[in-house]
Amino acid sequence: MPSRRRSASGYRDVRQRPHGAFYAEIRSGDLRLSLGTYDMAHEAARAFDAAAWRLGRPRRQMNFQDVQTLQQALDLAPPPRLNSAQDRAEHNALQRRLLVAQEDERVMAEWRRRHPEDVAYEQQYWASRREEDTRRRREERLDRRRRKALACAQADLVNAGGRSFFTEEDERWLDCWLSTSDDTNDDDDGADDWSDWD
Image (cartoon, rainbow, N blue to C red; front, side, top):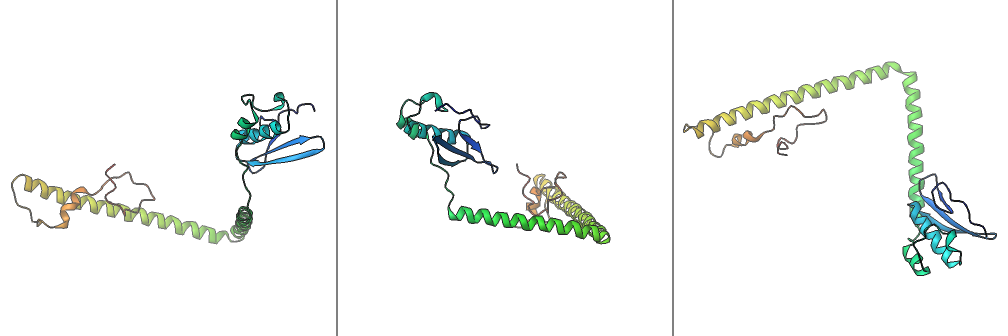
């Protein structure tokens, strides 16, 4: 049998599926033998070579010339990827979710077309929420700066031999280590005041 040309995958009788996996098959006369689906093209090519060794094909019809025996070919060939009933059920569920998401996008586009005043109101609402969140974060940051400055001033006073109006167990001493960084992003909610120690 004449050798087949290499496919777009770069290997003989290995084809890429639309979902990204690679499918290997070997032909012998009128018989087409499926060798399974694999994640990588070279895995499918190794499976093809193992089948070619079993069928007694010449080495020039194989994908890899580094294999000298059938056992080596079998050792290098990975097991095929199994498509169990659970895999098919998960795939079907993902397809349903995709269809729902596409229908949702279509309905939302239609709603935006029919109700531009609601779209404008929603955009205005979220803009005001962002402004309020920014104002709140700035106020919290300013408060942390004031608390930190007070705690640091009291620590400097004690280090210079003076007396602080903080007691020894006062939790305000911990304010010396508050983060007062200005480089927080817009998603920062200020919940972690101790994240400054990188």
